[in-house]
Image 1 (cartoon, rainbow, N blue to C red):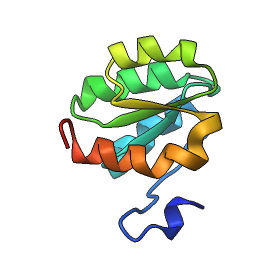
Image 2: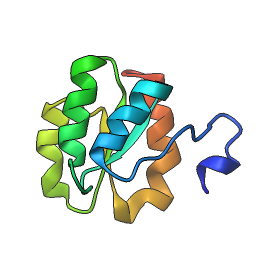
Image 3: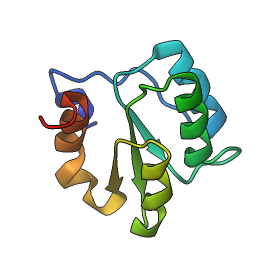
Length: 104
């Protein structure tokens, strides 16, 4: 809902599990991907690794409940992370910062 109100953002796909996330990424090639770490069938970390193997420049923001989950995700190529408790405050700013790139 938050993204729908932003003139510079479009929601192009959604997935309910990691395998779907990979398929949706292949089909839509989004500028930014929001990836929940906790998903059935294949978790978000596994899906992110698979996506980045095929698309090394993929910009993926990890969504998680626990900050302790973040280290591995960042080491494996996540561009940023958001704690689910902070989504309402930091989602749009984080998306825009990742899109702008380092040093912006």
